[in-house]
Length: 422
Image 1 (spheres, rainbow, N blue to C red):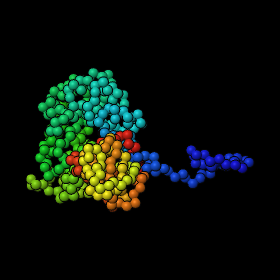
Image 2: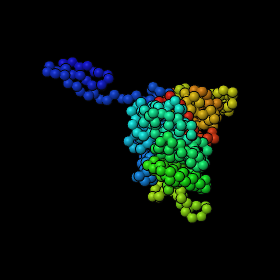
Image 3: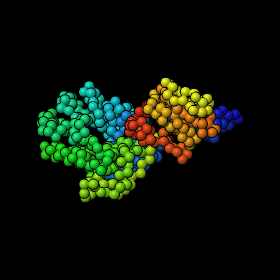
Image 4: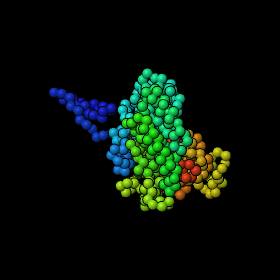
């Protein structure tokens, strides 16, 4: 009898006189990402499932849920996120035909709507791959009509965002073209410009009123059986009477609120500063939405050193230490998505403590002051976004420091950084 350990399967092959038997050895320990990666993202699938459930409980069973996964799923990884939610949502919302084709190439079969502009040359690919497009101009309607095999499309109505879309005054001409070319929209939709703060509802309610007018005009012209949608994350939370047939949820599925105002107003009483109850009260069922951030961004300490009092740190000598200081060098920079605006004001977490960024953020490195955090060594884990011990750093924290929004913080994390779904 002799044995051979096979590395790939981690099985022990044992030869007996009358046959071969395989015995499972103790599982090999998986390598920790910090042993092979300098920086990585961890995405919590349990948090994602929770967030989907939170939105499901506030929308009607008849209302479809679109997961907006454009821009690399808001930094979370397009394909992996889509696979995680595929059987839990009704639609995928992407920015471009390129993103839609990636989903199809990876075997994703759910309904897809391209929310952004599609080049006329790419229209046949949409039709061939069952990808629905946004049509928001007369030119694109004509391009679609010229095709032998036509893609499905949703009509975008401009009710006040003043980006894509047909105005109400354009609808008679649009209807004439649709009938002339024998086209029928799969859906109509609009986008709300200021639904994130229900204390200023006038503009949102005006947009919704105009959208209902557009719906009525199209129905009167004989168009039926299309999906109507207007609400993104904030609108879904704050304007429950406007869910229509579908809601497009992006930032909320990743565990973040659109703004601090949106988050706070989910817990306020349903009142209006203009008198009476507000159409966009908390939600119809009075349920509190509890979102869980899914993304953590981690790195390691690449070097530790002491600096003499009076030493300058980083490019352009913008910061000088006033006393003997111990610093850590972390191998991330603005190329990775660690914004240069965090120079001298940003923070990271090491051993559950906050460490301030010193000097300029470089392309591929930052320096952090660890003078008050003992026992730090090369290879220790660093939290850029996420929780460690009792401390946490959120995209909202970073956004506040650099004068932007949480959306930008997460979508600008370099897509080449490995995302690990847990």
